[in-house]
Length: 113
Image (cartoon, rainbow, N blue to C red; front, top):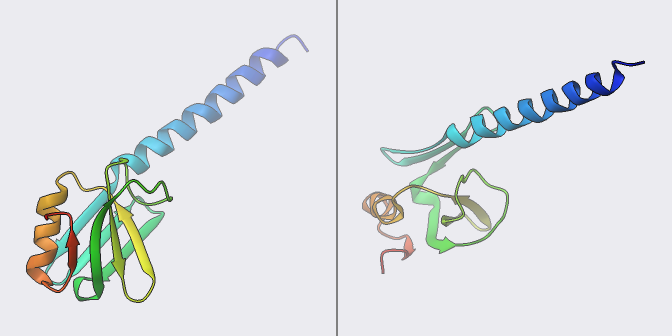
């Protein structure tokens, strides 16, 4: 009975530490890759999207807090197909937008204006 408070503290601390490590892992595993005609978005083992750049309709800056594979609040909203939306946070938004526009010049660009 004497060791219960210490056990509770250690258990809670261990759970919080494991949660922190998991969040840190996810934040550092986010990758956006443009190769040939595809945009590949990966976030650890939880999220993987392989999107044809030809399906992208528009790109715009956003401060939308929607849950997404974005480690920053400085984000880009990518609309594709009829109602598809993905929010990401590349380091250089302008260069990223230009790379997408090279592949698909029909994208409505609200970033490099």
